[in-house]
Length: 345
Image 1: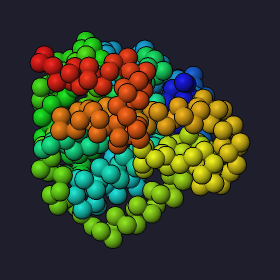
Image 2: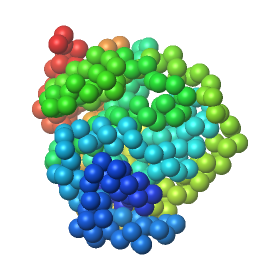
Image 3: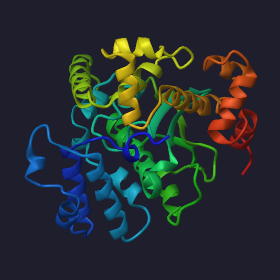
Image 4: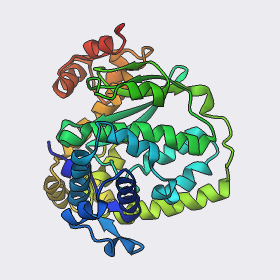
């Protein structure tokens, strides 16, 4: 399964302009980096300008090679300007609660085209008294996988500060990769216990803040910005059939639409849908399986849910079917995965 190119989609020019300015501010020759990847400053000035996935990935790969250190992802996430999120930032800040803001942010996580799509997916759940942001990033990202995860983790910290008007109280961070050379920075940024080599990447926080009123809440503004984000997201992803199909499947992973029903909802034939998916590196069942895998990892983090119940939530008639599927996805049985999550480190 290859998914889209490196987990990237076409990227909003506002983010690329900010990225080039940021790289310049830390001593890189951003003009040369842009030129090397066919990015024209003049072309970025258009109101609807986009940069291709290939150009974005090339720019980040070169920047990572030039960077004096190993923590470029954290630096990007922490320093990212609110302006790069445009209407989505205003939607989140004008939401009534952090819960609503989170739902909006995740629904439109592909809005600016940074790290999003089907190879990098951020999801949310509430587990007992904690909120949990989970980041699933596939190995196909290669050398950019760690940068992508760290960028999102650090940007959760920054975005929550914008939305809440205060720091998010993080209680624990699990990372499904070895401790990087800059591991000491994690304590400084997240201020919580950190586990590396964990089975999943999950950031936990005190859930009591989820339903507290936000300082800049404005229901009418939120309604307007939601409409603008929806229009922009639809327009930007018309050519991205996998992302559009993902939005249908994720509504109810236990009962995803048939290929024929999904095609009708996307206004095409099932043959055309299959052909377009294949062109993006997907088959329909593979996409369903990835949605279910992401949900399964989150559900297994909740000790109050039995493995049988989790399988049922994902559409498996019996535990053996869920067991076989999960082991195929992760190499571990659901029980072994759960035991690894809660092992004392």
